[in-house]
Image (tube, rainbow, N blue to C red; front, side):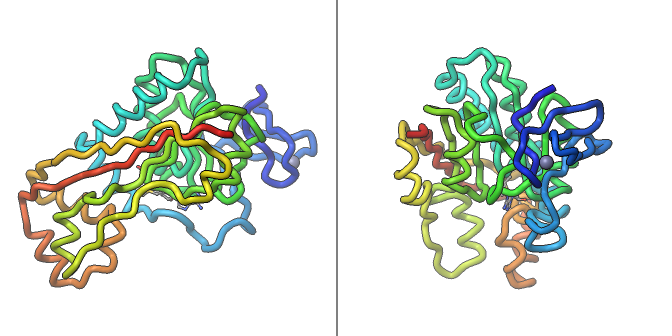
Length: 274
Ligand SMILES: C[S@@+](CC[C@H](N)C(=O)[O-])C[C@H]1O[C@@H](n2cnc3c(N)ncnc32)[C@H](O)[C@@H]1O
Ligand SMILES: [Zn+2]
């Protein structure tokens, strides 16, 4: 079966032949037992184990599982339903992590998408592939996506690295890109507990997106969550990069709390390829 995947060695299309993906130059990539494909070549890695580590990934999963960010998953689903006219659009989640949003969107869209997810963290992709069997997950980098030119109808990119040239290359003409970044007050109370002064997040895509995409819409989704238990606070804290740079005594103070009211605020941009 032909797919949207391309060979990371010679860039020819990959087709699935039983439990591997192959190009006509005989490069072959096995489907791992969890169901994902590793298309990240060792010379594309900047470290031995790139991307989020297993611990961050587990905390994010446990936190997301509690439904605190479900309004974002619902919002993205309705946006994609609105913009995608195709009955079975090709959808790719870039920097998909352990697939919470990829899986949610795939299961809840009104249309029947062909869904893909890509992330540089093998641990995250392993988890995602095991959990969401109807999505094709691969290990790969946003710097050189293992995806054919003009093959996707819609990309989602949530709190993950972006690459304007790669996004424009793999999207079909008029294809859509949904980018989620933290808006000004996102996790304000947590950041106030850590830093003496906090700067509002600068949300949104960088200016260079304007050369390849037109912005159709920007929406801030903001609400408050009540973290009602020490484990939920721990999961949120440890899934952020802040935890790892916070001094031990401040870490202990935050981890000792069992209730925190927290602002969450997402900027969602809908862009269309020019
Ligand atoms: C904050 S997490 C967000 C994950 C997911 N989108 C979510 O919101 O649950 C950022 C993700 O980007 C991935 N990442 C980092 N560098 C990457 C790269 N160069 N290519 C692809 N993914 C990358 C990390 O491994 C991690 O899973
Ligand atoms: Zn090849």
